[in-house]
Image 1: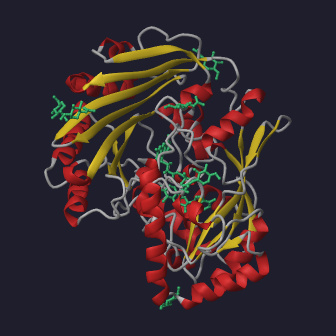
Image 2: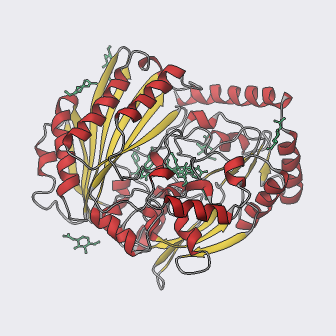
Image 3: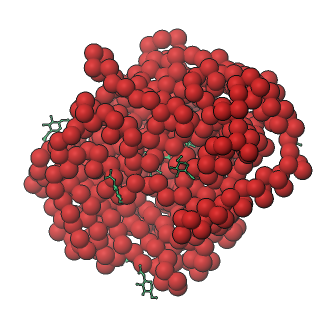
Length: 494
Ligand SMILES: Cc1cc2nc3c(=O)[nH]c(=O)nc-3n(C[C@H](O)[C@H](O)[C@H](O)COP(=O)(O)OP(=O)(O)OC[C@H]3O[C@@H](n4cnc5c(N)ncnc54)[C@H](O)[C@@H]3O)c2cc1C
Ligand SMILES: *[C@@H]1O[C@H](CO)[C@@H](O)[C@H](O)[C@H]1NC(C)=O
Ligand SMILES: *[C@@H]1O[C@H](CO)[C@@H](O)[C@H](O)[C@H]1NC(C)=O
Ligand SMILES: *[C@@H]1O[C@H](CO)[C@@H](O)[C@H](O)[C@H]1NC(C)=O
Ligand SMILES: *[C@@H]1O[C@H](CO)[C@@H](O)[C@H](O)[C@H]1NC(C)=O
Ligand SMILES: *[C@@H]1O[C@H](CO)[C@@H](O)[C@H](O)[C@H]1NC(C)=O
Ligand SMILES: *[C@@H]1O[C@H](CO)[C@@H](O)[C@H](O)[C@H]1NC(C)=O
Ligand SMILES: *[C@@H]1O[C@H](CO)[C@@H](O)[C@H](O)[C@H]1NC(C)=O
């Protein structure tokens, strides 16, 4: 299966690229040629370059893997990003940035007739035990980060699947550590940022770029290209099995009980060491849709305390493998997440009301997956609930706040992801319309921010942010000619 889709992919790549050459954007081509002369052919690659094809294909969503840049810039250090960005700015070329490549937005980590930055050669990570901080480059993936720092007993706050990348930090970031330590971006200490004109600045909570620093906590790809993250080290990952938990699989007949338990945990549990990720999964099998739902349940401690998970554990399950595990193993419980070849799109919800809001979202999603217009090109779809606690929000506020700045309530963030049958290059307007119907049927509860990293391009995520007005002002200050919003795809509203 993987081999077959690689062949299709290679054929697609060359077909699309050479078709494109007839209409090639000469500004992009000239800028690429000029940059290759300046930076060399290892760093700036055309489709005949040794890493072009592999880099292009390395997007989680096939819808992005098939979008072909005029050239790919593979920086080794920040100055390469500066030089390329300065030329892009001067020549007015379209561009995109890719770290781990997991974006569910078509065109947000890929660009046609333009220049793609891909950070596969900037993957270093280190721990400073005097400052108790971790410095990482944008190309590292969370599994690599956790594995490399495990001997030191520390980890950055990152994603919950090993293959996901650092773009997550700029969108806010949901980590298994978040209920105790805030959103992943709340751990920022210092960021190096290449602004649209190529200038490199360092932003901290207290220096002259404190406004930029806060904007980057949720501001996504709109405020510049981050070339170095320094974040607070979290002492919650070691070579010891100091976590307790695992994966519980439920049959579809347990849906109602799962929704009730998800709601109860989200609204009542205060212990910050307890967390979960409840993922409803509907898989299309011919004309059938099969629901098998997975709960990743985790406690930072040597055993599950009584009470907290009892409702979940009382629900009839297919299997249930709980025990002492390391944080690294916890990260891999839902699989590595490194599959490629299937187009994926996401969308976000957020609920703070009663269980009926959870049920309402579930129904909207289940109807989508069983819609006769959707099923033929849908491989599988998930609806995932992440519990966000008041405590987590207050930790973020104490650290200077972020740009989405949620109200102080317990709520569940909802991620709706749909994956296409392998090799499908685009969804039909009918499937797109059915996806949009799901968002309409599950609007966020009043006042809650949507999560950038699990949103759809049509959702106006910035407008749901607590600090939307401030974000717009900061954007106008750092990108006065609005170059970013004109020349790269990303969240609307600034
Ligand atoms: C299987 C899977 C599991 C996931 N699990 C989680 C999870 O547990 N928690 C969670 O919070 N989210 C999760 N997500 C969502 C995830 O946060 C987003 O997909 C996120 O965008 C991934 O970052 P990336 O670096 O892999 O993606 P990329 O697509 O490379 O980057 C995402 C966006 O960020 C921009 N960007 C990346 N790096 C930079 C940079 N250095 N400077 C400026 N802009 C940049 C890109 O242009 C792009 O728009 C998951 C997604 C998938 C597909
Ligand atoms: C790219 O190459 C690396 C090894 O060099 C390999 O592990 C990876 O699977 C390749 N990715 C794609 C998408 O072909
Ligand atoms: C090339 O791109 C520039 C700016 O990115 C744009 O103004 C121009 O119209 C494009 N040309 C073609 C032929 O697409
Ligand atoms: C996630 O965050 C990044 C920046 O970190 C942003 O550019 C991207 O659009 C967000 N959304 C998705 C679905 O990846
Ligand atoms: C799963 O169960 C729910 C609740 O009983 C039901 O509404 C839904 O249609 C079922 N879904 C599938 C795919 O069988
Ligand atoms: C929660 O985790 C912290 C470590 O982050 C630990 O010190 C504490 O004892 C844990 N609390 C409980 C109730 O287990
Ligand atoms: C898919 O359907 C076929 C028969 O229609 C069945 O044999 C098979 O077990 C099903 N697969 C799954 C994963 O349910
Ligand atoms: C992660 O899980 C996959 C199966 O889902 C397994 O093949 C792989 O070996 C695991 N990796 C680690 C580091 O545990």
